Length: 608
Ligand code: ADP
Ligand code: ADP
Ligand code: SF4
Image: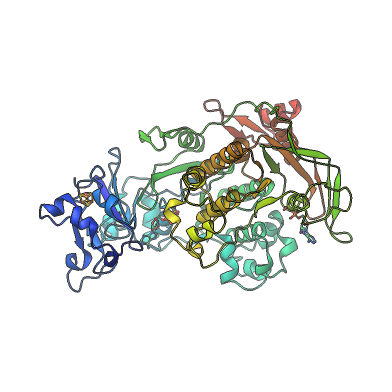
């Protein structure tokens, strides 16, 4: 079976003192006397360094019968083993493996001078590993962890590919790299000064003024970093990366916590920097409308998260995203998902449901003299609908929600009923030292019921993280636990603020389905604030649009149908979407292009 299946053992989970080596006892080759599963201490010589404890297991990929056997996977009580057949179409050797029975990466993205290259793929598929190789932090071992290859051998493996010249420069130490981390919330843990010091300290190009202006972070320049909001931190992190003078910029997710206007601005800034000289930009991004706008070409990453990942050759951005959504990669002849992700070409019919959850008169609220003020037009929220809420940050969306929940009294207008609201905030801060299962079972007594499993745990992919501590979760995992916690409470209204943050595309689609199914099956009502236009499109029945001047004045219209709402919202932003001819996917028009002008004249910004 050599070479076409891989065995991955999670050393954090493998604990032989508690299972008595069930895997070894049942492995068919082991039972015929072969050494397929062995103890690490027996495999490696006495002084040979190796990962994991001597008593933890090691699986021989040469002897293992492959995924169709899978007996050890079934027997392991701790879900520590994965045996996966690699796709037959994959005819290359790994670029890197972290060790025996560890994650393997196949392929590498090819940064190209003067352009923006995107990577599209799920979390845990090796994108960061690839970037660490390109940044010179990891020397690729071509899967030969025991006898690591020389640079010459690595160069040989990539001769004749787009990567050859990049790797040659990397080898000479000629590549300088600037990176924006994925989780901007953690920046205050490693930097304690004010914003200005952070940015000016790395301003190697002398462009801090221009970039802070374009990203609109002047107002917070003299604020301590630990007082910034997530959206501010995201823009500060972008600025602190883009002011550096590097050959290779790596930006790991640029959109979390940014509103659409800010996403478009950040994209233009990145494109301008790429065009200025020989710089290459590599961007990982899960907001597909933004990736489409931003990238000149993309690599799709697929595989089995935490086991292996394959990075494809570059594709045009348009066909890469289309293939990804369709679930089938043309050149690679590879199915990566059973169903396609599809968008409605036309605005859905306005639901005829007139059953009302709450009706409210015109409301207004202001915070202190001359500070923020908000006006809300009279409106109603219907039972059993998903109401999408769109508008910039700092425009009063949470203020409105607090009034609905009776936590804040309006200055004018009043609400007869106060709603019981289950709220998932934008910045998820569940980090008690507690296991996921304990946390969720403290929220609902439905926890563990088959109903809860199918409606919540499965679609949100919680099974594999149930035993982990909240403090050890990644951003995307924490988001899924927070969505589950929100939906698991009994409430009149479920309010989810930016559920897409840190979820990959697959997880966004699953979370969308989970929220929709939950509202349908529970006759529940949800309000979802999000800036990922595709997610809002797939999720919402109606829209409520907020506009105005952030931090000064906000105005909310009444909830309207999707077509009217998208037109109102996108007219405020001056952005139009056309449809991809083959798939019907909405794509942002170039400002001033013929389509852009025609659609603006016709007043059709989205469902054109
Ligand atoms: P992504 O950026 O796509 O989310 P990563 O490259 O961060 O993915 O990680 C891919 C896989 O590699 C993960 O399952 C992770 O657990 C594993 N991994 C990352 N670093 C190491 C390491 N030093 N040793 C072993 N495994 C690792
Ligand atoms: P959004 O949810 O649209 O991001 P918010 O309703 O949270 O907007 O805030 C709108 C504006 O009101 C922001 O400028 C915010 O700083 C300000 N604000 C929010 N709460 C208070 C408060 N308790 N006191 C003073 N200003 C506030
Ligand atoms: Fe043994 Fe491989 Fe079967 Fe696991 S999958 S029991 S290692 S042959």
